[in-house]
Image 1 (tube, rainbow, N blue to C red):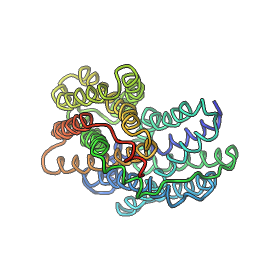
Image 2 (spheres, rainbow, N blue to C red):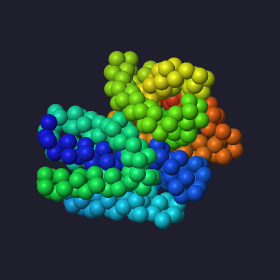
Image 3 (cartoon, helix red, strand yellow):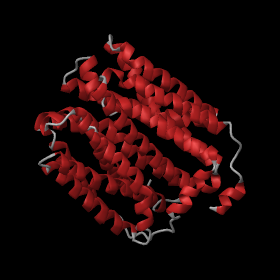
Length: 388
C-alpha cells in the first residue's frame, strides 16, 4: 500500500473527530456558554447540514483546481475554523466556526477519496478507500474518547485546539509527501440530482436519511442519556464512547461481510429490523450496566453496518450512476444526522432524554418501510441512466 494513503487517512481521522467530538462534550459546552443542551445540539445540526450541502456543491465549484493545492487551502481554512471555535467568546461565534469546519471537512473527505484512488494501482483502489474511511471510524474509537478526556480536564475549548494541532500536522504531511494531482471532470450538481427521479433510488436514499435520523436522535445526546440513566461520571462516559467506537469499527466490517454473504437487499432489511428493535430495547435495559453495554454494542455495530450494504445496493441498483449515488448517499447520511440532532433536542426540551431512543426507533421503522418500498420496485432502466 502506498504510504501516502495513510497521510490521507490521518486527514480523514481529523475531519471525523471534528464532526463527532461535539456530541460527547454537549453538557460542558452548554454549561460553559450558558445555553441549554438542546441549544448546544444545534452545533451538531448545523455541521451536518452544511456537510451534506457542501460536499457536492464545493466539489463542482473547485473542479478545475489542482488537488494537492486545493487540499492545502481547505486544510488551512479547516485549521482556522477550529481555532475560531477554540477562541469563541459566545455561542454565535462557535456556531459560525462549525459552518467553516463543516464546509471544509466535507470537501476534504471527498478529496481524500479521489486522491487516494488516483495514487495507487488499480488493484489497490478499494483497499486505499477502505484505509481512508478507517481514519473516520478510527476517530470514533480514539479521537472522540481522547477529546472527551481533554475536554473534561481542560475545558470545552481544548478539544478544538487539539484538532487544530492535528490539522497542522496533516498539512505538513500533505505538503511534503503528496505530489501534484490534476483534477478529473466532475458531473454537475443538476445531473446528480436528476438520478433521484427514479423512485427505487429515491427511497433507497430516504432509507439512509431516516435511519441516521433515528440513530442521531439518541446518539447526539448519548452523554446526557448515560448520565441520566446510568449515573456515569465523565471518565466512565469516555470509556463508553470508546466501547461504542470499537463496536462501530467491527460493524463496518460486519456490514460488508453480510452484503457479500447474503446480498445487499437481505442485509439491509435484517440490519434495519434489528436496529429498530434495539432502539426500543435500549431504555429498558438501563437497570443493568452489563446488559446495557451488550445492547449498546449491537446498536453501535448496526449503526455502521448499514453503510456498506446500502452503498453496495445503490451500485447494484444503478451501476451507470454509482459514483453519483455514493456522493448523494454521503449527503443523505448527513441530512439524517442533522434531522436527528434537531429532533433529539426537541424531545429533550419538551419531554426528557429518556424518550430519545424510542422516538428514534419510530424513524428507523419508517426507514424500514422505505427500504421495503425501494427493494420491491423494478430495476433502474439503462436508458434513464444514459440520460444523465
